[in-house]
Image 1 (tube, rainbow, N blue to C red):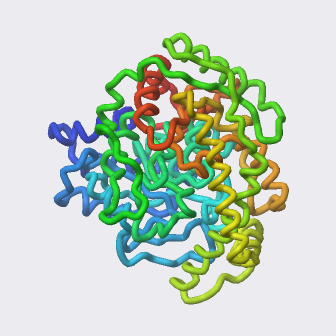
Image 2 (image 1 turned 45 degrees about the horizontal axis):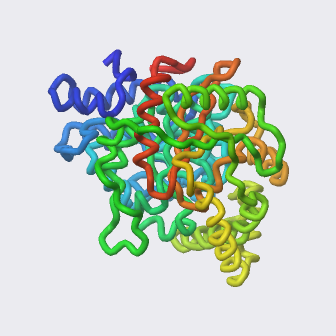
Length: 474
């Protein structure tokens, strides 16, 4: 299996279907790569090798990823018999008795669950560095962050350990690590991939689950396998017209695409990222798309301010549920300073504060959605600055207020589309002078993943990225 890492998930499943390789062989190939690369990366924080080996020789479901090794992010995703730390000392030692709803869907796809990946404490930061699990490093340069909060999954996929892995996104936590690690990362439409009964209301739709992958088709095929409504779902996402696996085979046609690098505070982004954005716009023009220079025209300050009480209150509610599971409240030394500050702020919110926050955000979302009235896609960078080194946004050693300032400069673009529920995808179209990836973010109308998949497949063909390999690879 020397060529294991050169295949995407669909490609590996095709080898299994043709009898050219067995699920057990794929599992051993993935395990060998965890053992080779994890000491450098700290991407995989729980190794479920015994379970993976047992499942690989058993009767796997006839899904599109039959026999393909797969990793689960260690955040709010129950796997029977596996720990769920959520990157925290408070939750260390907690083991789930049964699979969660989305875990069951991944198993039904035929994937072989190999282990769990690193995440910051409760997924709060855009870097994967925690006191409990330690920093996760970027395969392109291990001195740099892998992004967050799905940094462990992104690091493992980028290094060729697995072809795709579970990820989740509440303010950018799929798109940011995808951008840092040179991957495809789609934040799906609100409620497109339900995680019941585990997700409750998942921050009123702000948080979504999907995967990070090296190819567009892996993202599309996994969304076909997992992106369907639960029976009696109260807020199902609008249905798709056809399988996303078919969308990647279709032409996007001539799209009207708005391009902007405007930031909420009005400060310019890094010149190298701006240049990469302009090259991407030129590429799109060359492919026949209509490209216009235009921002969203929304009140970013009001939008971000509107969400504060609801986000803090939601975190406090989630921690209260967790305390019920554990049978005790967290001690101050069991939570990082930023986490403790958010928890205390959430506990101070009144019901009126939270409801007003949700009401204000809902009304401001009209601005975001209205900006797509005469365009098909909005293009901007994922990040405003280059991928920083480990420690720059370290929530353990950097004061909380400073963390928030630095994250605001790094990640100014991703949150509005969590609030509005729109699909938004990072593509690894560019690389900076240091050899680190630059992600470009494409956002479509509500529930229109189809347009993103068609455009992404076109760009993957015209500006392929699979030939690039990080320092830590295969």
